[in-house]
Image 1 (cartoon, rainbow, N blue to C red):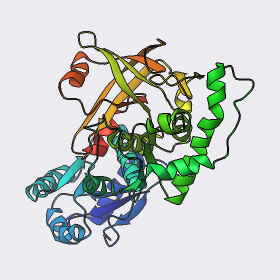
Image 2 (image 1 turned 120 degrees about the vertical axis):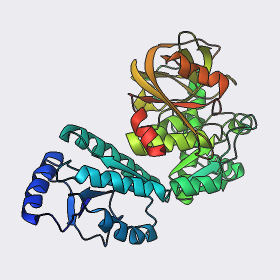
Image 3 (image 1 turned 60 degrees about the horizontal axis):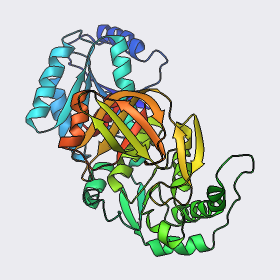
Length: 397
């Protein structure tokens, strides 16, 4: 819920100011879905989104008096709503300038009713996502794979930026659970190669074992050092990860924590964890990039087939067909101090047996494609349906 607080100069006639304010708020919140607090700031900062409606000019001093109390509550970003009438915009600009002088962040919300509705909706979405991630417990099952030398995360940065905690879980604990987990046979009606069908029950054991760990450690997401499963249980985590992600539970491959953080942000903001994949071919002149991986969330694909895992030729991998159309490529760094986001289009799916099983060709702007060859944040990136760069940038801004 959004709360609206007000500051008003005593020099203005309250009756006329109220008439203007009521009409203005009805335009922005036509369904009346906001909590009007007026000049009472005692619970400021306790809602999904708190707006300060600067109703008139001359209210700057009132804000300055309120600021120390709001700072004491740890609030460092302020949204100043203005109708543009009664010199409210001028006062808002003065307040924002003062905030910036104090090293604080803020924004004046001003414009048409349609713009304000859209902007407030975006801010509400970001605020709810941050609340959803705060307190999350992130499992690291078996540590990042040895080749992911640039894909670790800083626990303090994760706590500071997301309010989330990294929880390390030994691979041996997962292996113990796999050994005693129940299994499910491959669906008889689903076509698959004989070797894939033989591996299917073991792949479901991995899923059930991971489910036990998520409950034991109260996890909200996890990353798995999945390649260790190839030599220990002669199977893969691809099926399990596809299932967890389809259920809205972020789960990344190869112990890649920055990829997992990216998927968690995407799920909280957009309701989709995304397709974790690595570029296999890049054309910087056309902006076309081939992304591939052996697992993909079932809820992202229009169709899929079970296959073997590419590198090992064993286990159960997922060959999915992603819908063509608008997509966004996203990745955060392990310190959450840097991110990449680019909008583009998924042109087509392909299948070549010398690559990871789900293969999609995207077209980005050439300058965005060049990023991968000059300043990439690791090799894995997250592909999300639709164009959502604004929301992602807002979250990380």
